[in-house]
Image 1: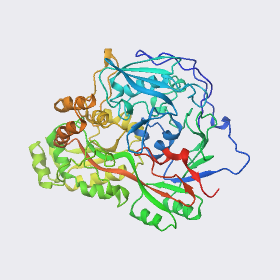
Image 2 (image 1 turned 30 degrees about the horizontal axis):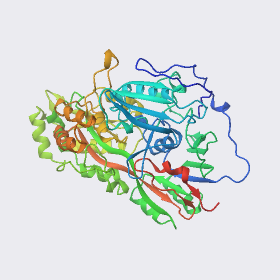
Image 3 (image 1 turned 45 degrees about the vertical axis):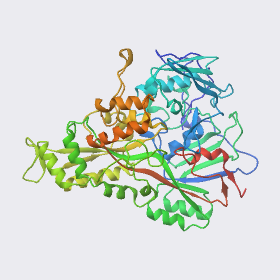
Length: 555
């Protein structure tokens, strides 16, 4: 893993014009030269968790990097102003913060006071420049998770050595507690080589939590986290947490032997039965903050017409897609019949009306859109065949598999298509800003505030202030001024989100811009006779969010 080292002072003032400045970042330390942390003395107390993968790309703010391992590592290694409580509501993290509160109504201003002893693992203080760096990146970078709230911020200023941060918004934002989670070490990243896409691409240059990274070995599929001696709060009860990649059968064998004490996997029906056969193993579903959806992109030339989009939706068998994607595993109980709030969240209500597969409607709608069947029984217009490009992130299930199922379903209706699977970085940061992708099978990620999620998913991109860089469009390339007033009103707290969604979601279904399928749900297996405290974690926060309190009972 690459490492960045050195002790740098945090800036005391961050404004709108540019990010804070300080001493240039230290040079990268090659992997072969990175210091090795050794443990001596008594036997190490550790818990080993089997996982599906430890693939690189660990930026929790990037759509391309979303995975259980990203959620797990960020919850333990990155500081957050608020964290999800047991009831799903945000709670101030007093391990990092003294206070965070609204201090002015006009302009709407939130003042954050950071603990003076809170610092990164290289001893640089956690300070205002970390807030400013995240704000500046989230408002302009493509492919980020829920940027709408950050785009409301007009200015960030600081005092008391950067430990008091004042954030001024252009408009009220009741969901402000969802901001500034998983802060990044600005003093190391803002001037580092490369772009935002390289942030946390292979590891963590600095951490600020109860654990630190001892090793992150992607080829071997293993991450070793050790208790951090630099953490300013109470130390963890464990010496070490190990995340180890394995096949599902290997996970089951390791649990049976006691080599692993827990496992977290994306399971189908066979995997559920496999784990049930293990003596003394307790299993629980763990919903991810990720809903599988099919985007029919109005930004594409072929699907800019709503009649054509409706025809494509009518050609799809949604029930078959859900069955194929969930494979009768835990996700099957979390079908997503809403365009914004995931099934596991408080406030979820089914709003999608009726089914999708309707071949007669497909024929009628394509005819109305000017298409006709040719001699090969394929749909075409003016001699040009209707051929759609379906995209899914490379090597990412269930998205790849579902993209091919969609292709097969369209073929049955005489609609030609092709599946492309670019790497996630290319897909989210470039291709979904352009017009050549017609259908995207991608995750809808919940970052904590559903009003910001609504604006980020379906709102029009705001104009750039002062002639600056325009904000990237949403992944669907969708903008409808008929619903924008309700989107803005929900974001600014002028109307209740539930009231806004009651008006907006029927219009989203009528626009045929998205087809939600199901929430991705992992299966947690734990040996409760061996470990204590290993549970599902706070809602959507991930299993490892509770790791500082985990204990071994047999050591």
